[in-house]
Image 1 (cartoon, helix red, strand yellow):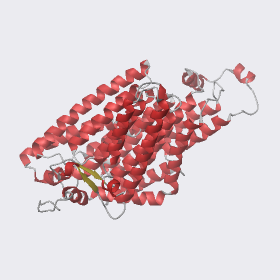
Image 2 (tube, one colour; image 1 turned 180 degrees about the vertical axis):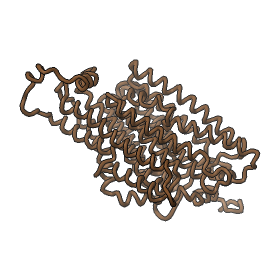
Image 3 (cartoon, helix red, strand yellow; image 1 turned 120 degrees about the horizontal axis):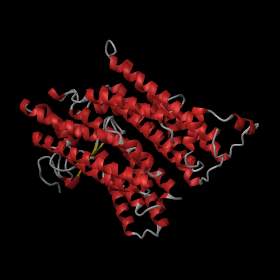
Image 4 (cartoon, one colour; image 1 turned 30 degrees about the vertical axis):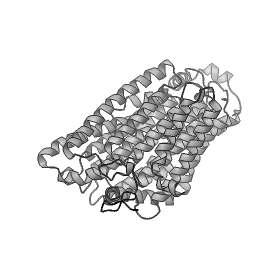
Length: 540
């Protein structure tokens, strides 16, 4: 047991790595064995993530660190788990289980190495959340992106291949910017350890500061592309809409990786204690986030298909989180973290739900529905189709209830967790400002409210055309193993609502720890080597 506890931080990386490699060695015809191994591994990862969450929340602002090769920071590679990274690892493990359960009936057979790709994606996600230095952040980014390329193309088809190739090209360009930014920062500071960077950046000479800020700016652009900020987000709705349902459900957390890094680095490297670079890029995050909300809102209203609406909803959530990070207020950050958890679970559930709903639809049904809305129905048709009551198949009723819950969560209406998250953010924006509230804050408040109403309108319109005025009138064939992941994800949103108080206290403590990073810095840089005394002598 002590071995597991001592290595708890690295297990979320090693477990999916070993599982993914093992699954590659097995023949693809052993689908039952491969799916069983992969699901068991993901369940173990969930237990590890829960243990990690409990351990970092045990007392105060604890950061669990792990020195690879027993080399001390900043000379060796260090992994660091605090409340934020533990929360993200937990979210990733939940999405992995639900996506794999959903894929058992169909998508796991649609192409080779599906479960291996999922495991490597989870390994990259866990590594990106747990790494303590920027270069290994780049490495884990590349691992998760390489796996996501395969998942984006999984199932083939012209639309999927076209969107997937655009996705690959955009992310390769972003990776190149990532590498350039990292090189410039290392050239100026001589380190890539995040905690050590936070110590050195305030001491950078004035003549080197433009080069440092250029590096941080280029690095920020790479993360903004991955987060889907406007106008660098044109690839996201198309790619997510074209991807298979389990892949899109996993991708719901991909855009949050960029936001996670921007949140951590902006408060750690250019926070209040970073000297002349304090607040660098915060205005870009705020105004870029607001532009993304506006663009995503227009996309939600203009979408005639559920998949594209879900893709634009991802943009709205990304824009909201980016603007919240740009404000740099601890109260807003706390609500934004609650919103991050709720919106990620909701988006993942929605992508899975959409496939089940659309099985009953004929090709071109959306266009026919739009034509009906624009030109009305023929009077003769109204006369001949007059009937009393509509028989709704049971599965359509269940899907309709789930769809309604997703609409409430996306729009932020009571009583579910989407409302609590948006209320906490809006309360933080208005209560945390000292003196007069800036005009930009009022604009952000308006955008958050308008985007919620737009999501409600878009979802209601598509829901009516699907569940009440469907042109097909057929019920989809849905298996229990497909509807269960959707129920799990939406139930977790319900639990976030019921346990809103404890969860919000956890988010408050997380936001407070991020805004006061001295504890994180000392925990990482002062972690003792195992078996070595501080004098450097071995302990016998």
